[in-house]
Length: 344
Image 1 (tube, rainbow, N blue to C red):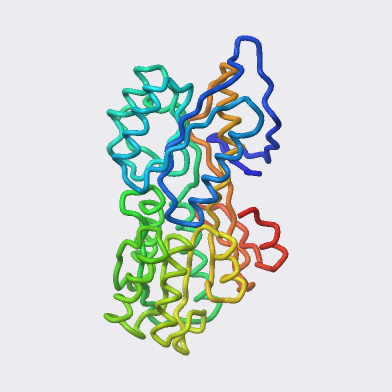
Image 2 (cartoon, rainbow, N blue to C red):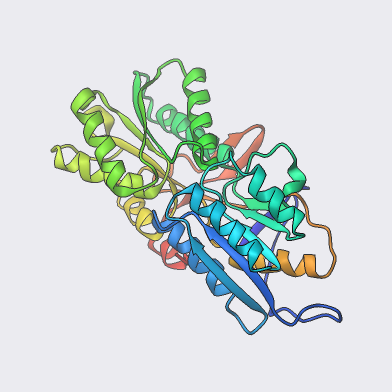
């Protein structure tokens, strides 16, 4: 189940029931879904959520396409969906740019496009009908404020040397989370950003990047800012292989890891202190996307943007909330019960 904030700022928990076919509506809707790929635990959970939601009953016929992390494959998929005369297109775009022509073709064919997760940067926003996803820059700001508060509560006033494993360059999550960290480094004079490299949201690449950073900076590194859990898994492997320890005791040589997604495995690492903070990015879009499609079928106008409500998790209880842009956000103390309640 997904909790969302509409663009107006109001949010309610939504229980999605089986849709009822209204007079004049099609009995079966054909939906084309172009997914980034299967590069991470988050992505696979997102795909499962969408495919499960659109497989319930006989209301939908979902055509799924795995782009294997190549934008050209997504553009081909959109054109294939148009040729198949689908009723709706769902697009989780690999990067923000480069979509104008394909989305114009969908619009000319009268097919509404709902963008989910990552955004598209197009000159004419009417090329897509609606977007649903996370406020990635807010996620990053909340993580950076937690880091600042953590060191403040610890009474640590020395320089903090940070290495940054970015996501796929040009992806909305990468753009937002990177912007938040870069702003925080500018605003905190003792934060030093030693290096930034893309880990492409994968465990293997995250390990490669961390190995390279450890060779160049060694025990100077205090904190690793990973833009998703899979990159964090790779960083953890590299740190341990180098005979070093992940953890929050940086004064005694541990390397602090901050991550995003809050997958089950990521929270397991957070519970035992391997990951200091994990900021949630929910992948469970499926039920909400069926609701958006059904709203359009009823002739309703959708908000252009729908933001997903998300949490933060840590076992460090001294920082139980953060403030960003005048708004307070709770940091949930992580327990085994919290992990067991999670759906992915």
